[in-house]
Image (tube, rainbow, N blue to C red; front, side, top):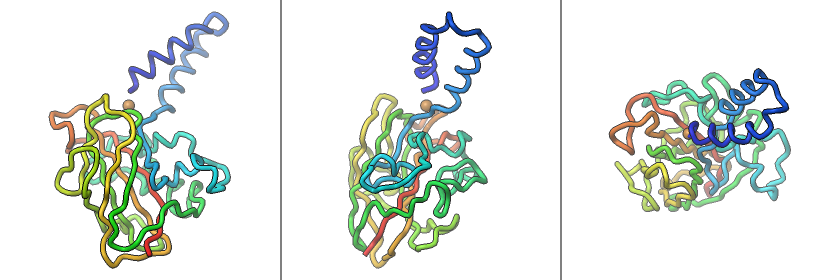
Length: 226
Ligand SMILES: [Cu+2]
């Protein structure tokens, strides 16, 4: 991703370079490469940090404009995601959490207990790896409340161990549809569905599972289960 971005960015910059001095150019390239990390988001039900994508929800700014790059502060993660914010912030930050800057208190999906829910994820830059969904089955979101790791029933990509969906290869960008099993008997007026995309970047022999430090993306979604 960085290589592709840098080529495009540099060629755009070169066209206007005669007007700018080299120090400014260098700064622009560094800022461009470090801030743009478009890789993916949950579009159905719509993620908390992507709420601006559906204006009918009426959410007001500020918005997390780089919503396809909610990625633990771009810090690679161990297998327990121990240096990632609860909802994808950089470690120690809480902007994407319930009650944080980007929590607009808007429910984007309503389901019934035990239902198989349809989800859609838009992968804009596939880095292999897998994605998982977890449910925090209570109104008050906490770091430890994601006690239900949900199983995939079916979907566009291979399922591993029930609760992992491999995202495919580097060229498979676009929407991945999947069906996810909600637990029986869990109801909430508001609870948090969490998507975590653990890439196989840096590259790994197993394209789906990278047990070592891996670039990771995370979204929280506010849903209701009747
Ligand atoms: Cu990338």
